[in-house]
Length: 567
Image 1 (cartoon, one colour):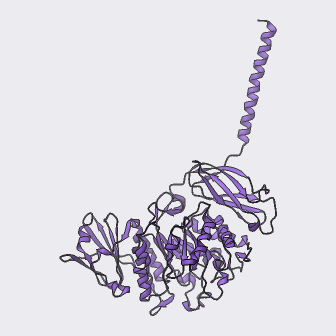
Image 2 (tube, one colour):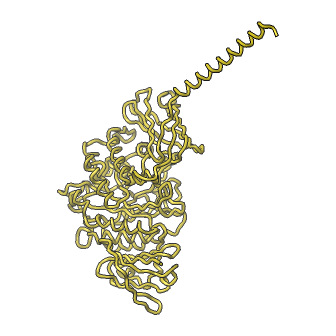
Image 3 (cartoon, rainbow, N blue to C red):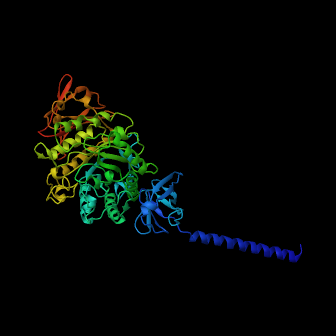
């Protein structure tokens, strides 16, 4: 080979090697310079903040923002965004699966490059195994596979013990709300039901007099109003209390029904308003109540079926239910709606015999066997200290009866407590706004400590000490039912599907008579224990055996729970 040829090849090889090194260093430089994707804990909120390139006169009417999130498994989830004032728009999302996620936005105004076609990615890390709230450890709430109760995302059963604080988030200061939430968490409550906009009992909106929206045919949303509610939702989430907002209050009664958005707004505006709120709070642990205290029966159901589809039909969402008016049963109207996940209902606020019969032997007690199965939850039972009792305001004993009956007359999923003074966030000087016949309540701080509220701790401890989700109504275990003649004496009975434990609530009789076969057929030797629903005290039960029945006397007067377990 010629010397100059060898020299040329050597120069070429050196140049090629140097070029490769230069190319490689350039690639490495780009990789190092590329921003790392955000790290988001599983079941936490990931927020996208976008800046519109346009100013809109009425943003919620002129543009709609959606983000498509793609999971590590390739599942595509549509998530609505919302306008948050000025040119700021946000999308809030809770990832449920660890691994790499991607997202891309869509805006109805495709010319808005700040909102349309924006893309990104993040990494979802596995949830913590200890520390943080119940939602940080176990995830948000959904319906169990069998349709009977609620579970966290990791399948941990969730016992619904909600408080009714309709006006709380609207009327409380930040410090008051912190105090309220910490008190209810200490009392073992697990959820809070509340109202999201101006409504019958808060016609002027929040404590500052701000309204959630103005107008009817073409509403304008007030982001400042909802930013305050964001803080309320965050406090509940950190404390492990499920947020249960009513999106559209809908009662036709009261002095001004038109103040309720579920009454006054046309369907398209009701959908827009509700979807706006879903977008704001969807990344926290929630169950949605679409409508509040209205009549959705018969031909009136069609409007709400359409609104439900418009709000939830094309997005991934938390469980949804309806809150109908007193003793208005709407299961049949909504059970086939794909967005309807829980059968919520309300009894009357009194202790008359007809109301007690509705609770003990009404549609909930009859229809729980009908498919498709959904959890049954009484969202509004008689309120403590609310006028409606035979002797005036209803006491803790009326509340306990309604709660235990409701928990045992359908597969056990949960119950909502209500205290007069709490729901209206009252100061104790007059009845709640537009509710003149309910009586003057205690100030809300005092009402937090009413006996029935304190006794919810006993209720929570009792059911959460059991596999409550396995309980099914079992009236057949009773040899006699005094409630047939006098409904206030109704004895509620439930037992597990495997027949290894049983719960019987006795409201006032001194003896409960059981079928002996109900005990002898249990899987193991029965152990009978009385539990005092007022203080949680437990006492061994003494049974008197007969040829076919078994009589078990209560330890002393008052209502009692009989727990039958096996060993």
